[in-house]
Length: 62
Image 1: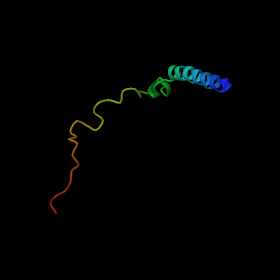
Image 2: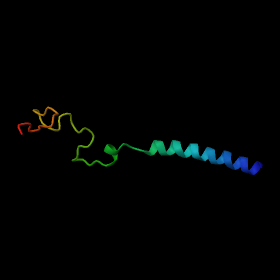
Image 3: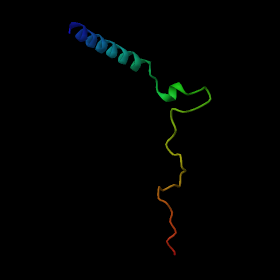
Image 4: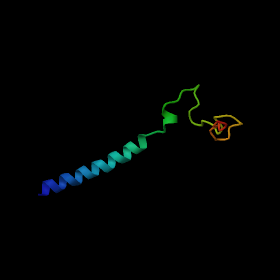
């Protein structure tokens, strides 16, 4: 019984240490998959044009 409890405790300690190590190693995708000539971090605020109202134009003259 002592071996089972100590194994569970050791597995928990290893899991906590691994979670901290992996969370520190992660980077955002715009940092990891960018090159010097690609802008991935800030896509902009107006991607559809200045005159876009957001409404889908539907022909109602039928």
